[in-house]
Image (cartoon, rainbow, N blue to C red; front, side):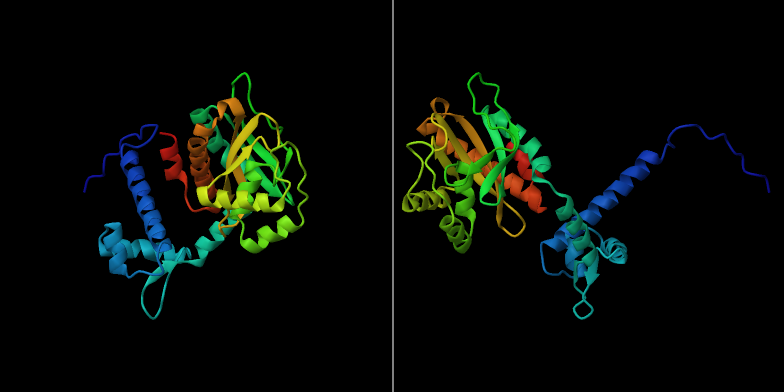
Length: 282
């Protein structure tokens, strides 16, 4: 028997590397698709998983068995149905531990700035006040400016009223009970009933409005950002001189703020948001 002829190995990637790499990426993509499918339901049979994932049953089973060994999926011993595993909870918990709204929000608010060309702020709750934690500043000669770290009263800001409107009734009442309704301008709500009526209107339309209530000549629209428990943790707002935010512009800008808040909620809560952000960028 003759010995095989060995040819010198060329430097660089082997010719089959691209195909192999593509196969590995495709398998990973399919496995992620299975986990996303299981995350959307309370349990599925193998045949249902294979049909929804458009995979042969044998392929789906091999993927499930691999994911099961990692604890990423689990199988009910009685029904045979597959569900999300405890391992994914540990991975998700790690995300919740390290997430930071300013880091998540900066590219999103920069995109909103590009669309509206007005200053966009990201604020978070800190005790009984809001703190500005990120900003995308307009380049207009006259523009709204809020120093990072600046604290804002909840009753005299669009962001504060948006967050109050998003709270459950008991928490909102608790905060209002301890709130000092300081007057900053002639438009500031210093009467609780007037403030509560405004908050009710915010809940109805989906965004808050600051009609020169904190600073004379400035207007703002804002919508609340939620965590995974549907509790408000902050708000995104668009601010501008009142002359550039007339009455007929408020509804459109408010809708933009609400849409962006939805993106930030999805990203912060770990429930996606990238697809919505892609639509926002169009």
